[in-house]
Length: 344
Image (cartoon, rainbow, N blue to C red; front, top):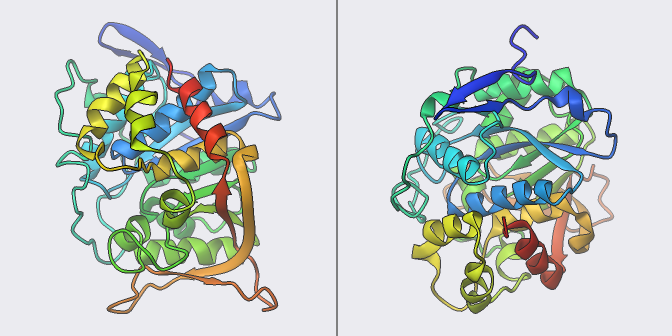
């Protein structure tokens, strides 16, 4: 690669020096899971990323080596600012961040701004990191080049619409094949949905991208790990009382940040953080109590079904199984993991 953005360089910001992550230094640890995180950085993404970074501090065998941003919860430039806030809070501004696409592949639906106009609670963040920290290389190129440089070594964690991932797969037909593992939050497996009837936000925001990625992993005979809306909202039950009075009572910079970012959503009886469930199974797949392999597609067209996930539950069909549907996790272990990873 001409621009070795994953090799060590020094960036000076706010009178501190941060060493950019060196992938090569981790490759001697065969069991260490090296992660690329693609995010639209709403408040829930913030919790999810802090969960990963906290797990690293607790000596888990994972390492986040780069982050790419994509539109979804808000404009991609605001997404970048939110990511930098999370990284500063976790003292991890050494992780390189790359700006991705601000439009879906064909048509960009209007977002619902569920998490506020900045998708992060619209609270005042003192002394925010400089946006100059965001790399000039485009996120899609960063994805392609990093995976090509380290085939079979990097795992991809997708917290938002799959626009960047689909574009990378289209530009480089080895991209999906060369990933170690793929983790995706998206889709409604039982027709409940959270943005339209039967449709989940991430796949709805770019159904063509979701279609490309699911078909792409099938083509290269891979299977992505999929957490759907129903797994997060119906099969995982965490009380709002626990969120506010147990997790929310931790005296840490991470919890201080998420309490502010999530404040508008801390209502009702149940706390749902779908992105955080995804990063939790990335950290430790022993959390998974039930999963099943299926063939699935996303409908890219249609007035009422565009962005809908269709799973072939008939196991006797002769089709390649391209998803591992995460159906249930151990909720108590999940809660204990968050208490450990967000205590910093």
